[in-house]
Amino acid sequence: MSKISRRQKHFRFEPDIFATKESINADDGFLVSANSEDMSFTVKRSSTGTIVFDTSIGGLVFADQYIQIATRLPSENLYGLGENVHQTLKHKFDKYKTWSMFARDQATESVGEHTGNLYGVHPFYLVVENDGKAHG
Image (cartoon, rainbow, N blue to C red):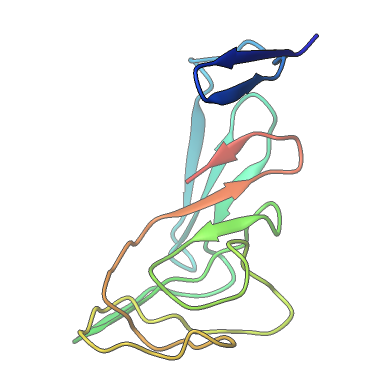
């Protein structure tokens, strides 16, 4: 049941909030395994067996002003990875893209998608997995 109250010169609408909270397993651990043959590693969620990070599809490149790591992700619900221009917060996987992670003091157009570097660098991503769990 919602409530609308009248106070002085304005109305305030207070909607009911029926938020259900599932318990969170604070002990939900991860298993890390390394493969010395191809220098890759995987990170698996203990409770579900979901592989949340798998570097076996490509290598690690660490060079002057260039770092690259490739991974398989458990879903296409990827958010974050720097300050860049795109139409939604969720990244699209319809084609391969390279995103710059170096900052510069130069604005870009805000129309369309541009992969140029902007003012901030935020090397963090968040993936919402298909079962609703998330990692980053």
